[in-house]
Image 1 (cartoon, helix red, strand yellow):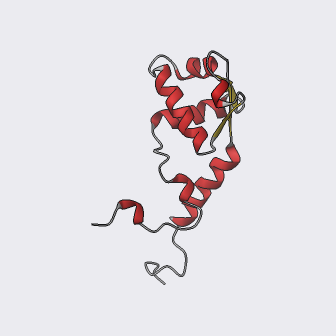
Image 2 (cartoon, helix red, strand yellow; image 1 turned 135 degrees about the horizontal axis):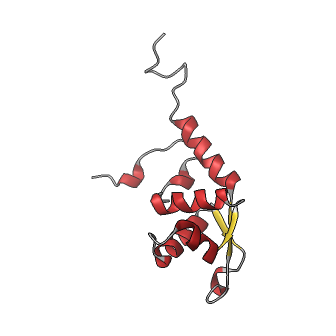
Length: 115
């Protein structure tokens, strides 16, 4: 049985693989965008409200950072007990979303297009 990771993907979609976009990651991206693209960790916790645990936000920030969608201003190995400011990398996120839109939009040459 082939692994699901063997499924072919259009060029440009590799960055979205494994990202595991979920409600928390989406909420982080939206909160950062709503606040000018940058928030400290405590500001981000406040923006997301009490419904999300700080450890959940931290884990999702790490995953977003691994994929290049956010950047912390403090190096990862120096963050313990230091306030980190997070910046949304809109260009990276938008480029990957445009690649997904392009890959899922039928073209005139598509075999499913009717003429």
